[in-house]
Image 1 (cartoon, rainbow, N blue to C red):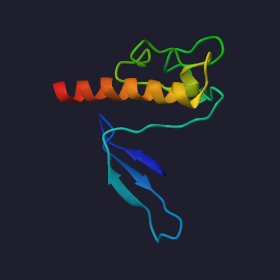
Image 2: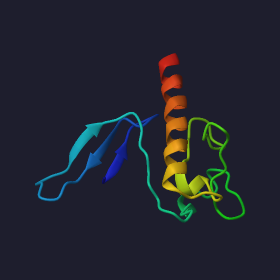
Image 3: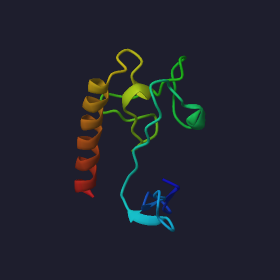
Length: 104
């Protein structure tokens, strides 16, 4: 992915493919960012609430200190950084997001 595009919300991403002459744009309503098994959160420091270890603090619905911003996986789970935990947290966040989009 080369860039995220949109004005007040995410509207599209620009993707660069190997073997392609130029990047293409794809309409999307959201973006999930995978940042690894250590809390690589320097890029959001000061924007989201973090704990003393640098992990993103989330509530039971995986929502961060900023409304409609969610964090899942290793970056938000210092106690059980596992694939299973990330999948469960992702399912929770996806259901919450879908429910909110349906209400609009």
